[in-house]
Length: 250
Image 1 (cartoon, helix red, strand yellow):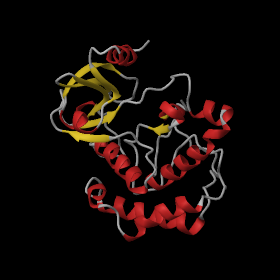
Image 2 (tube, one colour):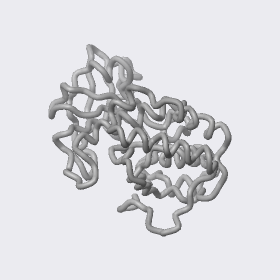
Image 3 (spheres, rainbow, N blue to C red):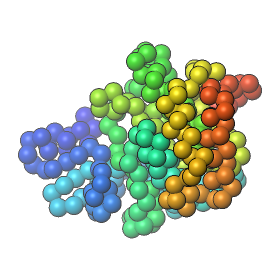
């Protein structure tokens, strides 16, 4: 049993008020207590948030722990927040609640609500073994296209409570150049549902100000351009190169 699961059991027994994933006021104002590292190419921490008797878990990604990249500027944590804002604007709820905290133990970074999920499950198991999940996975494929996700590994797809599928790790999104790299190619060439197209079409009129403020001007223009592509093509793209995959795949 994981530490969050043990604490959740304790909460059920009345010892604490605990939510596995910190949200709202707890995410924004709770004291941040590091619990340990999470596997990642950058420094990523599982943290507990504490406010009085309330507890919750979050994933903390400080800017100080980012590995320098030649094609993305420092501040990848801002793109984590931007991905959450895009998901919320579209009404899809794909990205767990994500905020920016300036007062983290290692400085400014993103805090994202922790998703309790079975570590044995990921994109490949879901797409192969659970056809009922395909609608959510198709929607995630559209989200990654619009966000220009450069790093959709299978392990970045989690199934949480109630069968809800979440996408995590969005620090490598929103580049102005086309850089889509994803494992979600099983639906390539399929028609995008009209309701998804309609949601994306709203970006043609205006990108929300808070989202735009986290990106460079050319990245905002490119985001609108990708929305325009979805509206015109109405199908998921096909990887003609056979190389548009992240590495490692999981």
